[in-house]
Image 1 (cartoon, rainbow, N blue to C red):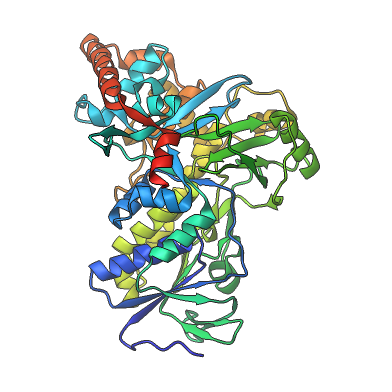
Image 2 (cartoon, rainbow, N blue to C red):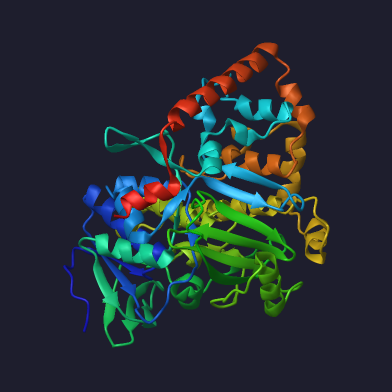
Length: 514
């Protein structure tokens, strides 16, 4: 069977039906519809290939995605068994027995700016005063108290905050949900056996499936995950390795039962261990967990034994995965764009996977898709540089997480002595003289969210990497200091009013899951 479509209609073929594949299909089809681009989207997925992952966290951009498609949060949580996420709790990273939180809201959104450069003075004030920067965040209260993002008013659930929260999700259920909500997207169940290329320019012209079907396309989106069938195996590519700065290379995923007598956490737990760290992501029915570790210091058997000792009971690992940390040199080659794991992989410490997938797709759709469907590939190099920069910035951000006081195991001694990258060194030196500012980060994603001050401050503060002397110098103006004190006081008063009457997290999930 061959693919039969109108000759004037462009064909966009998405290879892979996981979260990245269905996000690609949704976004690209919607953009084509809005901008009157004649294109048909086909998703090739296989019922024979399982979805990777045991629980995953998103960033706030995922709520933007839901809202933009008119997908209601209540329905999404009900169908996917997802939960609310306000941030990440980092346990035992700085030192054993210590934890810090990284709430993802931005309190500066609620207060007047100081100066033309938008100086985020609450952060500097908290550091100067020896207070945690998370104290200024509404999400810190919601996270700590286990509250929902809504309150009950006159038999209705209304939002209790103006920010965008994130979610904890089950990858497999999210893929099923997006598939069910799709309209006008052609779905093909099959396994790609061969990619047929144009003899003259090397472009992919069609994909041959295991049943002999040929799926023709003008633009191919590779969402085949670690297999990277098109972007690497078909078109050839170079791998940019990050392991010198991020040495963990194995993951042991497993499930834990939810304790129904306790509140469901509204945060991801990243718990540092002897040779890496463990994630715990709460969905409504269970905890999706995994130990991410470096096999230079720990065997799979030792990893399981360590986690069972920490938890106090046995676990049943689903598998033990070996992975490479890094990215493709080019995420766009010929007429193929790689998205998600196909473009690169970073350990899941800061929910970068789905976030980067959405940013890549939005950027490509807005700035390159129309020209590409018209066979104009002049933007390819520019796109590749921007996505490479995105991955490299995330690498530096994660690398700095390991700048810890811990030296208690060979792994932590190794990462302290050998793994700090030059970009991390340069940034940390700069921030000893002047705390992070928005102007320290180069804008290259056309305003799309990226790792900047709001993500860096809680991590740097939690690890003790910010200079109190530099902060005090920045707050030396008495009027500014007085303003910061008053604004923080008023924020706490606002937060109390905003959260008064809020539902508990579990209570909210029970209501929307009926």
